[in-house]
Length: 256
Ligand code: BGC
Image 1 (cartoon, rainbow, N blue to C red):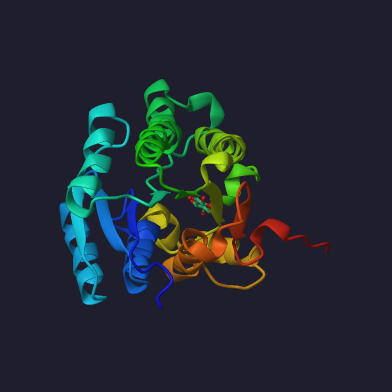
Image 2 (image 1 turned 90 degrees about the horizontal axis):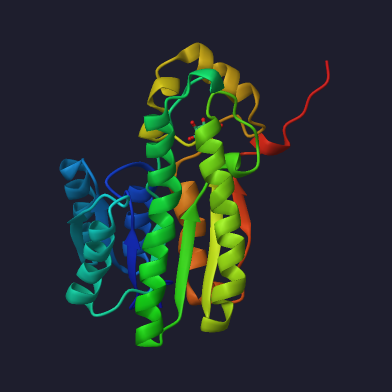
């Protein structure tokens, strides 16, 4: 039997990058998938084709996780189409680079809204629906090594990811009695559109690779493998932790 046979999963921001990789992997493991995008309809079409290619079924729902009515639309669509929603992957995220003294309020607000407020209220509605249906559930947040590690020039991003870490820890305690598990995956440098600028700059890329003991960037498959396991029945006793996937980046230390 496949790992996620019979399950239904919603993955936010699954029109590209890590979200798209998770949607593909979940479909390969037998899950039906709610694909979400906020702007890239073409990307979502590509994801749906991947899901169908894997022999599974999916729907595409346009929604901005920062809007309450869109959050309801997303989850209600899963129940309408598939009659259930077992797994939520809070993946949609963004970053905005600026020295601390130059961070604009509007940029700070947007980063926090997408990376933290969105997952907060999407998860709240997901859990309310599970409570009504008396069903167990799985929540996986795609966080970052920067829920723990400093990243100068990205303070609002780090604040949002640090918040996501405590969000996860709190909910592990509060939702455990409902048989709902929650964990974070903390990726390091992965080849995705969020790293577009870095990937185009060989000097910056070489400098980054110096910090990664495994000497390569991660792939979306590297992340999706663990996400599928954490979403499965096999991970039923795992809750309240962060799993780092970074090629050793966080442990890197050298002396001359
Ligand atoms: C960020 C990337 C960064 C990586 C490693 C990720 O969370 O989105 O921009 O390269 O962490 O520092």
